[in-house]
Image 1: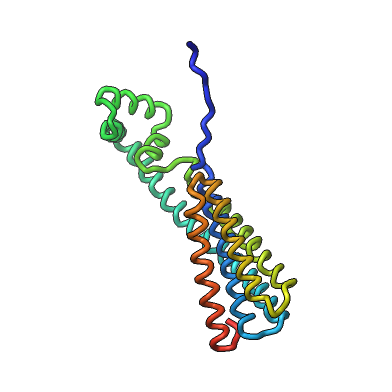
Image 2: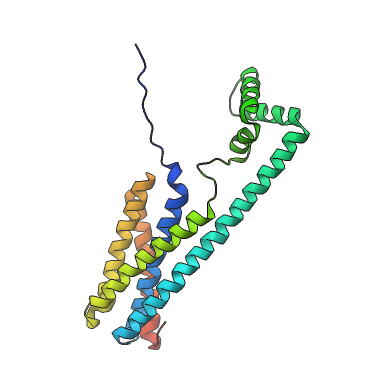
Length: 232
C-alpha cells in the first residue's frame, strides 16, 4: 500500500506578527477606550473627549511601534551575536562542534552511532544552520523581525483605537461611558477569540483574560475621572 502524503499546517510560523498584532490591537482598544471613559467621566464635552482620544491614538501607535522595534531589535542583536560566536567556534574547533552536535542529538534519545551520523550529514550540508536550530533554538520561523513587529503593532493599535473613537463620536453624550465600555469589552472578546483561533489556542480562556484586564483598566480610569473631575 502506498503511503499518502499529507500537508500539515502548523501555526508557529505566525507567532512573530500574531503576537505584535494581538498586543497592538488589544492595547489600542484598552488604552483608548479607557482614556475616553476617564475623560468622559470627568464631565468634559465631546470635543475634548475626542481630542484626548486622537492624542492617545497617535501617541500610543508611535509608542507601540518604537517599543516593539527596540525590543525585537534587542532580540535580533542577541541572535546575531550568538550566530557570530557559533560561526567562530565552527571555524576554530570544527571537530569539537561536531561532537557537541552529536551529543545534543544523543541527549534527545538518538542512538550514539546514529546521532554521530546525523551530525556529520547536517554539518556537511549547513553546519551553522544545524547549530543555530538545534543548539541555539534559532530558525527562520521564529527569527526576530523588528520592522515587521513595529509596523504590525502600530497598525493594529491604530485600528483598535479608531473603533473606540468612532463609537465615542456617535454615542449620545449621556451614554458615552457605558457605550464605549461595553463596545470595548465586546471588541476585546472578539479580538481574544480571533487571536486564539489564529494561534490554535483555547478560545474561552483568551476571551476571559482580555475581558478581565480590559474591564479593570476602564473601571480604574473611570473612577479616577469621576473622583477628581479632571481629564485623565
